[in-house]
Image (cartoon, rainbow, N blue to C red; front, side, top):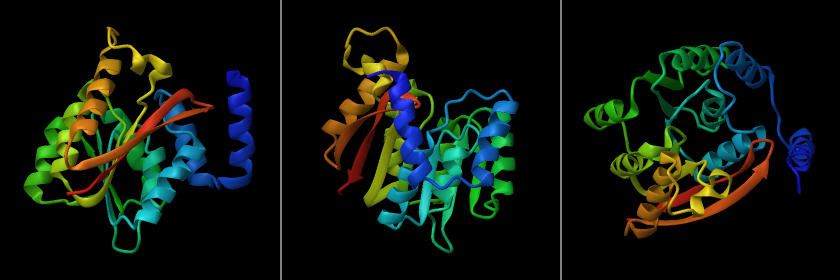
Amino acid sequence: MSQQTWTAVDDYFNDLLVEQDAALLAAVEDSAAAGLPPHQVAPNQGKLLNLLARVHGARRILEIGTLGGYSTIWLARALPEGGRLITLEADERCAAVAGANLARAGLADVAEVRAGRALDTLPLLEQEQAGPFDLVFIDADKPANPDYLDWALRLTRPGSLIIGDNVVRDGAVTDPASDDPRVQGVRRFTELVAAHPRLTATAVQTVGEKGYDGFVLALVTA
C-alpha cells in the first residue's frame, strides 16, 4: 500500500464521519500561516481523542505538547460542563497561536495554555493540586517521554487514561540500536509502561495522511 492510498482512505472516512467546523479548519490554516510544523493529529485522530475523552467521562484533561491547539480543541470539546483542560507548550510562538485558536473556538474559559518547558510546568501543577487528571495526552518531544510518563502517573488516579502519540516512528521503534533520541525516548517510554505495576496498556499502529505511526493507550489501575 502507498501513502497515496492511506491518504485517500483517510479522506473518505473523514468526509463521512469527522465534522470539521470553521474553528478547526482555521486552527490548521493559522498554524501553517505562522510557520508551525504540520505535526498536528489528523482529523480522524482528533475525533478519536474526542471520543475517548467522552467515553471515559473525562472532566480534567492534561495535554503535554500543544503546537497550534488543533488536538486541544478536539479534547476540550469533549469536556462536560465544568470540565477543564490544561495544555503545556514549550514554544512561546506555538502557545500564542494555540491561545488564539482556542479563543476563536470559544474555549478560552475551558482550556488553558501554559507556556514553558513541560518539565518546569508539571511540578507547578502538582504544587497547585491541579489534578488528578482523568486523561493525559502526551504529544511533545519524544526524548522526554519517560519523564512525562512519570509526571502523568503522579498527576492521575486509578481509572485515568494516558495516551502517548507517535510511538511507531515509521517502524523505527523496533530498532534497539537506533541513534535517534526520539526513537530511544519512545522505546524507553513503552518499556516503562509495560513494566509499571499501576498500568495496563496496548499499542496500536496507524496509517493515514500522517504516514505510518501509532499510539500507546494505558489505563491507570491502582
